[in-house]
Image (cartoon, rainbow over all chains, first blue to last red):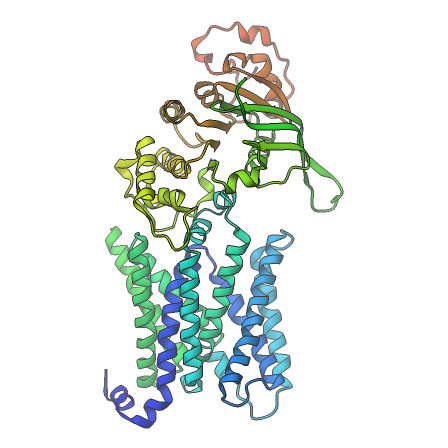
Length: 285
Length: 290
């Protein structure tokens, strides 16, 4: 940790600006750690990409309607609710298009992804002048308030509790969907719950990492962890450590290099993946 | 007559066909009636596309019956599955083998599936999983990652997972695919042992005559309709020729079936099937003329 970071840590004025972002980042790390392993194992990275980009349509709607223009807690909640519903709608639409068998899953994701981006672009053209939306694309730590941080922790705890409740049928479905269905597991419900959790994580990640980079946080911790171990408990633990180190390391890099926080976090996580991949290759050799 | 474990009554099923001619349906089963007694081992034998998997899916409640009825221990198939009465062993392809879990954890999934969400993995669950692993002889590799075991070991783990939930009916879908002849023999022994120790009703769906003949009390030959339902000794060349005629015709073209000649053949190399003939130019060498 160098002088720039120490300067940020010691200066009370600066600390008040970035601290909500750091607290929200830790919530984001725990969310991503929980979901990332399942996203990688269920090959949902592209679905996550579709859901996160669909958030741009929700952002357009929020900005065009002027929801949460002030920095109030109600405004934050309103913004969050609209974008979450937009992401969830996109995830369900992808699921419906793919499940009916009329459209291939990757085609369905591609359609929903570009459709939402296009809608967002059109709606943002109608936004009042002076409204900033770039932070939604690439993230901005200074755009986070304490209300955002509280919401992020509420979501992380909610998702954690939901995962505890549905852990058995969810894991069974994720591992072996055909037998799970035969054993009476409601696979449609499990799929919907996972999609809802992905949408929640995406919206939580959006302000910090931006819609463009949010997917990386849902993929990289799990991908790194799966390179490190073939034991479930160790993979979950490694995913949590990698997500936490990636978010905090990314924020430090962001302070030091004056990079956008989302890009910094992704760079750190990608670096972890490179190291893990090399380590896995050496171990196999 | 023993009580019925599974009863199919005039079951017909057709898959809707999508595409240009969406009004047509592809018939999979036609008017199949069959009764499986409690404790019976039934082998369902038939060619690819003969309706075996459809019958299995109807028994599991994965497909809804279109015509006729299917009862499993007097219940609808979905109710029986939710009550934990059915253990299902799929083909290898249905699992995500990249999952970083051990064989023991896979078997515990079966043992704890019906536990309440607030319950941890109890001693009873662990015991049920260990008992199932022991029954199938999989304790030695129980800690190995599920994606790194051989085909035969994987099959045993899947059977253990199905048994760990304490089912009364065990359904096995093509259990010997990808397993060598020695493994198939071991599988038949295992099935016999499980049947003797647990008194389970077993239905094995396969297109492998050896598997079905060696490990079952009764055999149902299915090629859309039910061609025969008898003991393995009733698997005469005539019956097999009738059931597999489309497969044979696909390789050799239309053939004349001389059932009498085939049934009186004493050549040991033909013990499990018909006399081998030379395939036509450019065709696969597997299979034989009936």
